[in-house]
Length: 295
Image 1 (cartoon, helix red, strand yellow):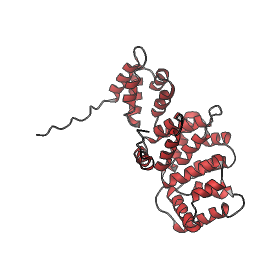
Image 2: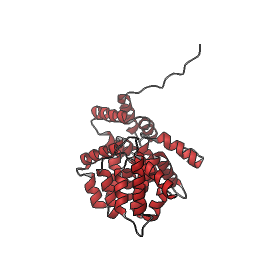
Image 3: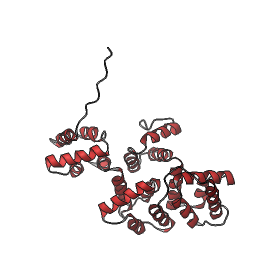
Image 4: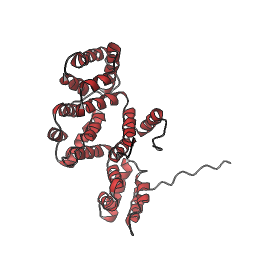
């Protein structure tokens, strides 16, 4: 008779809470134990652990983690303890605060999320910070970048895969007329189409653009726009075609050259792990011939 390998020992949220409490006791925190427990639990389990911890020890686990951990580990673990939408709300809020302004991070999170994810982020944002996401965007961004973000978070878009080829050709033509065909750029048209069309439709517009004009829509965006506005448009466009590829590239950029952009690394890994990390890893390997773990 073949010996079956034993299933992993399943711990309960209560056991996890006890183990975490032990990890905090004594001199210094047993960070390895903390990471080992929390990194292997999904959003529901983490929420139950927090509930059990509070019931047993009358203290908030998040606050305890903040006081026990330091630096980048603290940033990553504390962010990880929230559910995906809550986490995104926190990342955006921090990125928009005047003393920490990181508009690239806010733009990346907003412009890479689906309409239903954005709805949840907006609800979390208001519940956590007592202010509407739109108000903070209004306050801390400017120009066409602001117009794009506001349009993107307030327009409801179709999330299915069906596309309208005829409309895609019409939009491709409108974008060509608004950009490459004229002197200067008609930003309004770019904002309208990029904020109103579904991901599948935008990918179809991109394909139609290439068929009709021989160049890529991505190149057109790069040559016609700049700065934060360009970053927003490119994020929307690339995530409509292949979000995993977009994030694989962003991770590679964060680790390229001397030193690592830890903020970006933590943000992407923590916010995408429960969404599409398997796909990001596959894209990373395909593009850079090296596993993301090794990098």
